[in-house]
Image (cartoon, rainbow, N blue to C red; front, side, top):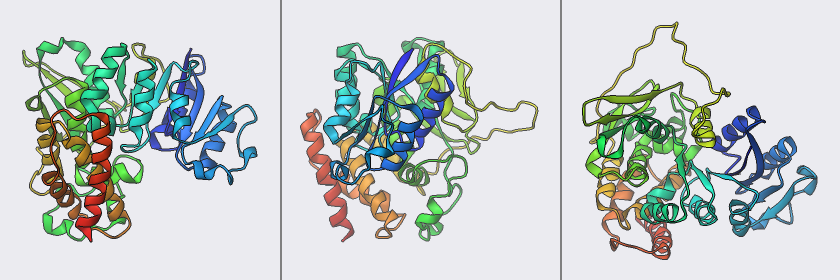
Length: 382
């Protein structure tokens, strides 16, 4: 029995994770859940699973959240320190890190420091601080298992060979809602249009990232550190059906791919139960119906965000933290109607070009640059 804590339990990944845990009662149990502000949803999860802890990161909610919204068996905690407390709880075996954005780094770090197995759904952790995080995981002998469907696919395919036998990995991208659009058409994109993803049901931030292809840019950077690859060993191909989740090409020419419906429960379960494969709640492909799989190269001119990902993967250092923070702030402004869709990658490009680069930043340096980059995007847009 693996006892789990889910950080970001009320988001898309978190709710899917709880479905998996609920479907495998003999294998998984829930020790704690954490969210930023969504106390109603967190309360519902508490009443359903009766975990030992429920954490709201926003301490300002303490006076207003009714205690009877939560199970009497659940202790309700508040504040960022409580998230770290849950992540390092001695009674927790595995931590699912699915808090959106750079905010997820703190919980991941606390779990790794405490020697917990981490199922990483927060790609920004490695985008911001990849070398530092991977060094910490290696130092403490802690497995860091990917939950993103693309990185889970790579991880599964890599079981077919040794690291020195890998020629390259190829991350698949759906292309988002604007696949095939021209730059002139993108000038007219509204938040409502960008939030309509054709294949996946996700939170608003990652859905916008998928529309700009920034999500794939961040995945390129994540893969660079997670799998210890050279930047020239990572490629991206557009695959509209989202059935092939990514693949690995080995030096002998063999290509290993992982396929499945566009649903997050399978990669979540694989990370939670690795190395075991169990019958679980993930949907299956229907091989009795006709289907076709298309692949074509991405349009880097129309979607320049993806090129930023390859650039940052090559440069490393402080670039990941700056790109991620600039993008998070730009997406916020776009969703608020204060920034155009096409200006999201432009703002990121401007801030990235104007930051003071350091090849080996400390964690404190990265936190400082995160704040600086957000402020720079706000100034750029004013």
